[in-house]
Image (tube, rainbow, N blue to C red; front, side, top):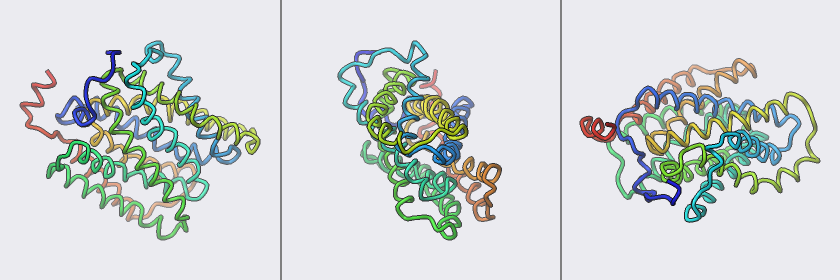
Length: 313
């Protein structure tokens, strides 16, 4: 399994299990999405005294350090796979974590979290381009329903929060970057496993972000809450959550793993109410239900049940 990726992106982007989600799949999805959803709160708290560039660098470094403690994560990767690994690191880690930190200086954390629900749409579009195939009717319906949920979720915030356009653009840029990286993860994960791939992705991101991290240190100050928030953000919100999500992508495919983007806004909204005393409108509650319905449709298998069953066996 260390001799290099054996499958192309087009062959592996749909994952190794094309059947309906099992309990373990839902468990991994909910845990990863829950941690990702809480990350927007931790970013907002860390920004109180830490520069965005230092936050991005700290996330990658802490996540890499946490995974490096596991012997199975420290194994090498074949030279043939390093170009793809570097691209996945840039699009999947370095660029998004920086863009999110910069965006939350301009827009509320809840809005940033809700905009992430565009991930499934971007991912499905890219996957269709990679495989040169049209999405199934079931997948198109799921995407359409999910998109309606996104509109319901974000409309009140965009209409009443005074969010800066640049902050919204930054989040959407990060979301598109995530979608690009999702198509690169599957063949790497299927060859090396999620722990090893995630650790090396974070190591490369740490190197890429180190100049920004060092540049931001003089503009940062030590306060306990921001520092602890960054620690949680790096270890759990980056290291642990990404290892879980990359593993899910390798098994169920990039498009179906991306339905985490429909759960993340729910977590962001709940934390906004409980921790930041934000208000949720009835329209957003409806959006949560619609988005979850779209996510469920996307989770369904893409092939006949008997074939899926035989593939699992």
